[in-house]
Length: 292
Length: 155
View (spheres, rainbow over the protein chains, first blue to last red):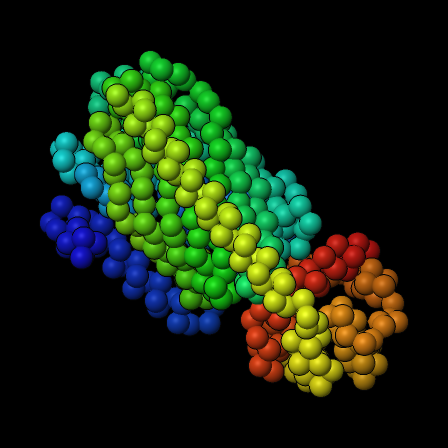
């Protein structure tokens, strides 16, 4: 119900417009036979909130779409998350070249429902596969990535004590699928180590009075109930740079369904902790991705 | 006051993750002890089902122009027999695969990841069509997956 209320409220009409046009395009494209990458369905993950291929909250080592070593893939995604006092909308796109390099862009808009106003940032990402494969290699797949983030308007974050209005995250990520690991089901493991100075992912600026850069651990586990449906949990450790706006680690329970290689829908329950002085932010998450 | 609060919540998060890990591990152990008595070969349905899976797979290959070209100079009967004995061997059945090693069998064919992935998809579809349960399909695919390195070594 909360989702539909927020989707149909007047303030979210640009999102609603985007969501339904995206849905229409996706359904039209998904219903006709068209080019798909050769990698196995779901091995490109979904679009994480910062644009890279991953889960919901954290990037994974896999590269977006199902493009293989001689193929090029693109994805587009629309994501909406709603917690007690905030709503986040993300639109993003990514390009996978030869399953070696992924570049991505994402625009995040955070509506401050209780505090009033909004915060936004643009994220330019790149990820390089160092070695391996999530299915076939004994060590899984390993990638390094970066995310350059620029706030649209740094006034509020700067007032809260953030040092900068732009910043860059670097990360190392590993993903591995274990076949038939739980009750005959395949289980996907992901671990990411991120060096960051971003407050609340960057929406509250970069650096602060308590610290600047730090290393953070992120991880997820997912069980493939069927080859097209994965259910799991994600955890993202967060820094705590601003003394006036305590920051907590993020957690989610997610379910992602891959209709085919072109279309996936992800739903999640979020527990994001305190955000900008408002406690215990919990809520839902929906993300639709189209891939070609 | 805010710091103990944060610690408590992080603590709770960690507890959740720990419990989830334990639950998954236990589920895995229970599963293993339950299935140790029957071999994968039996759960696949024995030699009869393996033979029909191979036949089903060959029809899919024949219909796929991107893959069938690699079988232009192949004795299909011999190949079917060899593949069936390999699947039987890999799944702990009463066979001993005596064909060539995977790197020599595929050398200089010019195979790419796309070809390998396509064959994996065809094999899984063939197993599904012959009524093999998801757990047995996943386990067989898991035993075949490490062969990727050998198949691709001499390309």
